Image (cartoon, rainbow, N blue to C red):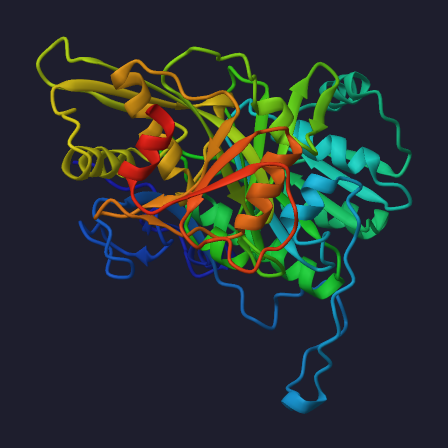
Amino acid sequence: MYFCSTANQDWSGSEYKIKIMAKLKSVYFCSNCGFESPKWMGKCSACGEWSTFVEELVRKNAVSAQEDTRSFSDIKSKPLPLKEIKADEEQRIDMSDEELNRVLGGGLVPASVVLLGGEPGIGKSTLVLQTILKLRGIRTLYVSGEESARQLKLRADRLSIENDDCLLLCETNLDDIFKHAKEVAPQFLIIDSIQTIYTESLESSPGSISQVRECASLLLKYAKQSGIPVLLVGHITKDGSIAGPKILEHIVDAVLQFEGDQHYMYRILRGIKNRYGSTAELGIYEMNQTGLREVSNPSELLLTRNHDELSGVAISAAIEGIRPFLIETQSLVSTAAYGTPQRSTTGFESRRLNMLLAVLEKRAGFKLAQKDVFLNIAGGLRVNDPGMDLAVISAVLSSSLDISIDNDTCLCGEVGLSGEIRPVNRIEQRVQEADKLGFSRILIPHNNLKGFNKKLSIEIREVKKVTDAFRMLFS
């Protein structure tokens, strides 16, 4: 017979209360939206996604709202009539980086929270450290949870930039970070990365859904009450989305994606969400041994102009945001070796390529059903401009016929399902960019340049259908 040694133990004292107040509880969180459930569910009732629930152990502390003394400002909000609210333009902080200012919408807004995401090794920490070292007269606190102070010092030495207003802190406890921020009183706070930060109010490990959500909410509260902008560096998953709950992207003011191929020197800073500016802007950088260099005129770097008598190459006049640039579209068409034709793209949407190939076969009469088609956007860039359609199908047809396109000709236009060339936006900037870089001819959609009276040296040819463009290019 066995007896429990604690059978006669009195659990009515303070120890029993501690066990009740700090009880470990198994909770399931949706990795897509952060919805909390006491049990596992196949389908999330909040966002409708399947198989997204993960289990976490969370310590629930019985702390009332009156005992929560965590506050960053004595100023309390109060309701105001709409007519009493002043809608003055926000004063922005100049980041000393033209590309970053462009993506942010003109600079960093005080009290804003910005999330910067990107693949490992793409250069997120280098971009952030380089930016804050260039800031003069602004006290910044750089909190690193992944690297030591010595590693950050070596990186700063490679950048060859010195700034006494930049303070480094290697810490992962959010409560300690707030204590240091109160002592230092920074004007700009950087957290690298949000997945390494944890708060002691939750028992789960750093990087879990509950920790990321709670830490991001506290940092948002800190930014809004203190007026200090906060930049969060985040990891991404294998499918390219920001790691952690989807609510992380909802609560921040701006989400920036730093992307690029590690085998190429170019990096793209793209705005996915921006409450204070446009999401159509992008910044282009060039990675070198001394850090990231701003690329003010990407057209001159992305064009090689050495493809004379080479088939499968077409120059496209693309637009990203308000910035025009010319880029090479490369294609290779060959006989399918294994029976099933391949469709492979780099830097271009594969579904749109399939649609363009169907248009090319149905409207122009070129049979590509039994051929492999490979498409590449030169420079490792990823462009979503529909004005590249005409250049894509021209490069594919050039490779299929093995006939080169004139080196001094560029193209722009959206291709419709009936084979017509549809108008594109900002056509004047596209034409002026091609004229500035010395191109002699540009093909544009019919009647897309109405009302533009500026005299240019470039020849402008208007086309209505894809067959009209093919006659001009290959006749």
